[in-house]
Image 1 (cartoon, rainbow, N blue to C red):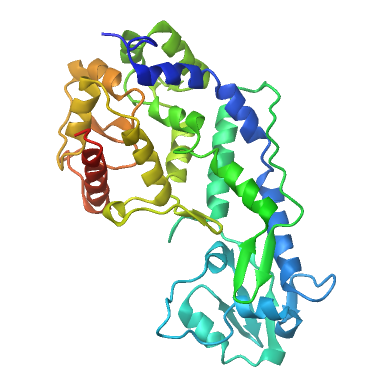
Image 2: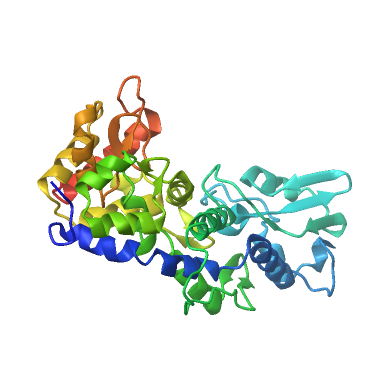
Length: 370
């Protein structure tokens, strides 16, 4: 049993794409570093918000433009309206102060409390990009993950071909109107190209995930054709005796937890809303590309069970063959999915992971894969 470029259509693309990992690394290399990205985004938003020149990082509330005042919600929130915060209050930390009292506008309650501050004595501090994944990954967190992936790939591809991609940020990024902040046309184009680097959208990023099975290197050698195995090695996916490199896999998986990037959202049909937006794109793109061969289908059917059960050691080469090129991953002796955790002591899914696997099961059923 061997996976070759001629025997499995899915892996024909995998071989070619993995052999272009240096080109993908070159694209990532054109992204601004974290400091430059953060500084330019924050500066442009600040310049659009205020009416004064050279303001430093704090201005009076009355130094904001009229549109700038409207977007931070000085008035109380109408109880009949949707209380969800707009994207700019989720992506940036907005801090206001009134004398000794300081308030972060990260909830509708705090926005309501702002109404009790006298406008003439209220100070607005420059909004700063948030970094973190609690409450949903922020744009800066996503950017950091992509830079981590870049650093991991550059360790294997220090010399990359010159690419045509240019990810320099445009000069103007935001437009502020009454109660809304939008992206400029140029920044919208930049964001669209940036999203094209992410797993689920980028064939290269997706292949780097789907080629990893977390099984032994010898299993990979036994079932992959020579060209495919060489492509896997070239991509940097063999690490510590396994077809798995955590420095490449982990930032890609973290990226899949995203629901948005600034004002751009990744919508999820209600049927699958246990998945994040980008996670849905990732699984949907795989399911839509089916059908797959019998071995892959068998392990997909097993992985979507509530209790997938452990694999015997002798079946691991067979699993490597089936999982290569798919979202399947060997976790704690259990066939599972790359973004879904499973407990080894009981070989079961629990909590949010159980909800996720139910959503993946429905998605696979809708595409008649299981």
